[in-house]
Length: 127
Image 1 (tube, rainbow, N blue to C red):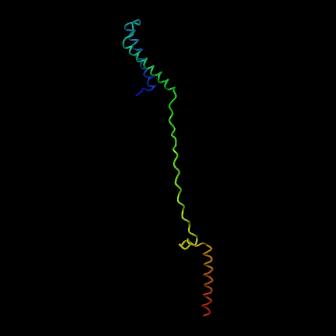
Image 2: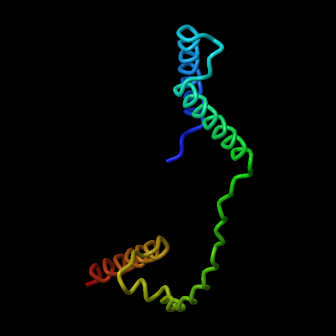
Image 3: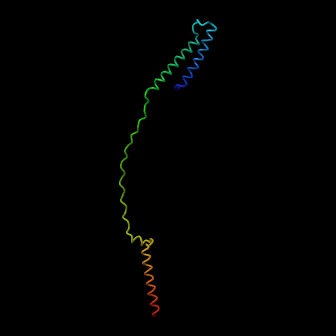
């Protein structure tokens, strides 16, 4: 798994602190004019590798990123035509089924009933 860039910077700082301590301890114990110890050489090599890795990551970050491929929508086949609806029944047939009569029908029936009642009353009075 690759190391994160921020982690490399932190590692370089830690390495620099250890290298500084190693250099100071060598200078105090053996003198400043002595060659670098094996510990210092290892720390210097590690520091060089870390700096190279950081520089390579920074260059890679500047490169253009690969963009996601846009999905092309596939055209759907046209839907089949629906079957035509059956013809509606005429209005008179609906009333025969027991639908509610209109207001005009109610009024005309009421008037007929009143006339029939008047005629029936007259006939009964004559007899």
